[in-house]
Image (cartoon, rainbow, N blue to C red):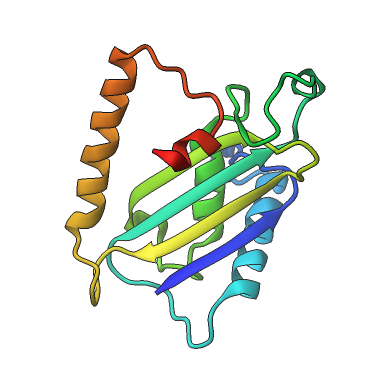
Length: 175
């Protein structure tokens, strides 16, 4: 089964836990964002959905607001990679923690993550697009993502050797 949904608004990173003597707790802003993730996921659940068991694929596209410095005419209209904060791994962590008990039993089941952090298209809104899929099951051999990872690593090595600098994500779709 597959679950896809969009979390509206600016992507939020998982905050560091706060520690007081004998106790640790999640910051309020992080807990609120994880609640928003859960709400968006629950609204998109297909009928009869039960939390996935076994290894899971998580795909996250985090689209940040487009800064004014990228609004020049010469800048591309589509999505543009972001190299600024927040960190991509913390964005993914906030999403995966918000999906606990909804998409899967525990985020430890996530075996493959594909994540991209971008700025919005010209005129586009900030959001997080999420796709969750079981890796094993009818017609889904577990080697599919391993094969994909090997292909991606080969392409990355080739791009480095060609000194390619693919800036606009739309170019990836043609490859």
